[in-house]
Length: 111
Length: 113
Image (cartoon, rainbow over all chains, first blue to last red):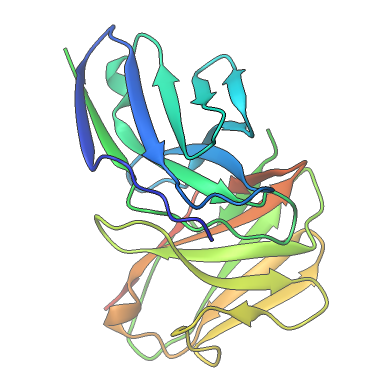
């Protein structure tokens, strides 16, 4: 399974754009990149998933360069409620395949 | 997105007793579900893979006789912590895949006194 490396923590002010980069140098050809958000005492919540280039949904964007050895989760105009731990996971996304969690990035948003 | 539920959301038990945690996929069927454990300030650790109609697959270091997993139907997997001890106190989370996305339950907080 591909190992991921993310910053341990990040700070931001409300209203700013936050970019969290994840390094995954040994990503396999069929691996996808998935980001989850977790609040204390809750299960992880799916944010976004992609294979290459750029993916955008109503809450975030995911940028994946051509070599796919890294990815960047972009959160536009964060609010206090975006304070959480964000996990970058790399692996097969099909039924039957587990995802292994790294340490994640603890994002703190302040007024 | 798909919904995975867990019951109970929290449980407190005495040392030596057994506790059962249920994981249900509410709007989809899952032949495979996963069980994770999360200690305070740590990441999720995969414990086992629950397979409908067959034996579960446990990760290295996880005692299969202590953490009994039953996947009796395509929408239900149960994790039973047998003879629980204080060191088993943790946050247990299950997950299942629907349309190529893994969805997680809300978690169950187990406290063993």
